[in-house]
Amino acid sequence: MEYTPISPFMRPISHAHLRVIEQPEASIPARPVNKWELLRELSKAQAAFGVSERDLTVLQGLLSFFPDDALGGNAEMVVFPSNKAICERLNGMPCSTMRRHLARLVEAGFLQRRDSPNGKRYVRKHGEERVAFGFDLSPLYCQSEEIARAAEAVREAEERVRRLREAVSLMRRDLAALAEFGEEIQPGLSLWDQFRDKATLIARDLRRKLSIEDLLIYRADLEALLNRARDIIDGPETEKMSTNDARFERHHHNSNKESIDLEPALEKSGAVAGAPDVYMDEPLADVDEQDTRHHLPKIPLHLVITACPSLKTFYQGEIRHWHQLFDAACHVRPAMGISASAWEEAQRFMGPEQASIVVAAMLERFEDIRSPGGYLRALTGKAAAGEFSCGPMVMALIGRRSAA
Image 1 (spheres, one colour):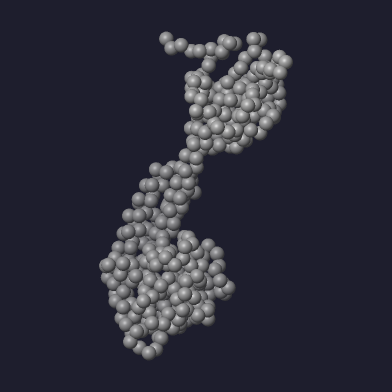
Image 2 (cartoon, one colour):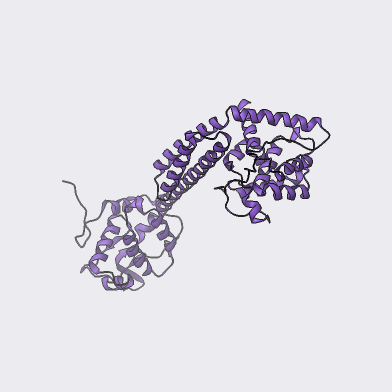
C-alpha cells in the first residue's frame, strides 16, 4: 500500500506538494515575484496545472490577504484569514464551495496548509519571532518560473493558431478572388462555382473557434485548390496574354511614342469596373467613391505579391492588405522616376489599388522599361478608355516566373 504523508493536523499532503517541498534549492526563484503578475501568468497557463477559473478566484482572494505585492525575499508567506473572511472577500461565495476550491489549490501544489494544534488560523509572536498558522503561499512562489514557462508556451501556441487562422482566411479570400478572376478569363467553367462555394463554407467555419489541427487541414485543402485554380488560369489563355504582353513591350521599346498596349481589357464594355473586391478594407486615397468602386482589382493580393517579389526588396513594411500595397507603391514610385502627377493620374483612372499593382509590376521589369513615367501614362490612357486591366499583367509575370 502506498504511504500517504499527513500534516500535524492529520490532513493528507498532496504529491504535488511533496515535489515542491523536496525540490532543490537552486530551483527557488532568485528574486521576488509580483503576486498579481504571477496570478495572471497562472491564469494563462491554468490548463497545464489543472486548475479552474473558480480555483484562481479563491487564490486571488488569498493573495489579497498577503500585505506585500511581491512574494519572496525574506518575508514569511503565510496568510491566516478565517473561512468567513475569505468568503466575504469572494463576494459571499458559499463556504463549502470555497473549501472545495482551496482543496484543489492544495492538491495542485500552490498552497500548503500550516495547521495549528487546534486547527485554527492565527499568528503568534514569541519576542521577535513570529509563527503563523494558515495557508503558506511559498509553494506558489517556488513554482513561479515553471508557471512563467507554461504561460509563454500557451502564448506561443495561441500565436501559432492566430497566424495560421489568418493565413487560412487570406487563402480563402485568394480562392474567392481567383474564382472571380478565372470567370473573367475562362467563363463557363463549373469549377469557379465550386471554388466560390468552398470559400464561402470556410468563411462560415472560421466564425467558430477552430483547433490547430482543423486549421492545418483547411490550409492544406486551400493550398491544393489555389494551385489548381492558378494552373487553370495560367493556361493557354494566359499564355496568349503573356505573348501579347511581350509584343506590346517590344512595341514600347521600338517606338518613339509612349503609347503601349500592355494589357487588353477583360471585356470591351468596361468590365474592368467589376464588383467590389473582397480585399478592400478602406479607401486608400482621395478618389471619388464612384471611381473607386469602378476600379477595384479582382485579382487576389496574394497573387500580386507572388508575381512581384522585388517590391519586398525596396519596401521593408508588411504587405498583407491593399492599403499596405498602396503604401509600398507610394514609397518606391519616386525612386522609379515616376512623377507625382503621373501617379495621381494613374490613381484617378485606375483606382489606387490597381495603380499600385501596375507600379509593382513595373518594378519587377524595371530594367526593360525605358521611361517608367511615360509607360505609366500610356497605361493610364488605356484605363481611361476602359481598355486596361492589371490582371493579365500579373499573370504574365507569374508565367515568366514559372518558366524560369
